[in-house]
Length: 221
Image (cartoon, rainbow, N blue to C red; front, side, top):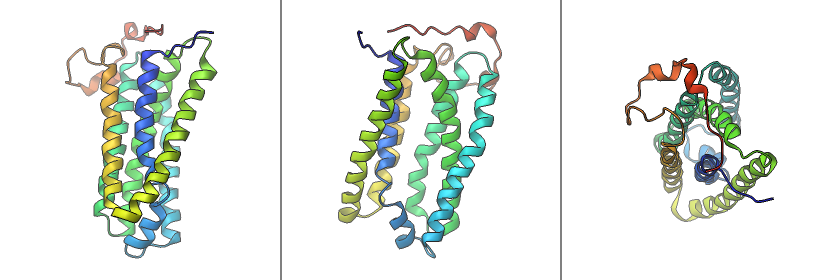
């Protein structure tokens, strides 16, 4: 079987790889950062921070997905994906200025909102554009590449923080996240209707119910 990755799938995987690899820098040091740099930081604060993120993301994920399923076309999915990824990408810069536990909780909540709407948009686009007969392979490629990227960057993050401190890590994570967002702009000619008005977005477009936008080409590029 000839293996060929659809252009849309390729850029979704690349964007995800860069974005999540960036967050992999934080993985081994986040608890150390809270305990060592946040006033009143403790294992309990780390637990609350994790709970705020996971619970908020889980609560918002389904409503966002249900909303997108009720919208015609792929514009809404794309804007949820892109805007959500951008929101999540600016969060690491906030960690540089955080001093109290409640700062961390707010940043975690913002991160959760961004990821909930981003993943809600990513999943349907990826699903629609997978090449027929290669569903398992391309989902596997996505998951495997993320695992390798996050694993390698976790090692890099652990080394970097011992040499240069926490701030360069957070800056790096934010920059990599924004690069992930920029990669999504490469799909401007592949997602129907997204850039019909150039880079000007009317938020009413997200709620556009035009049925003719629901025709999506999913063939190989």
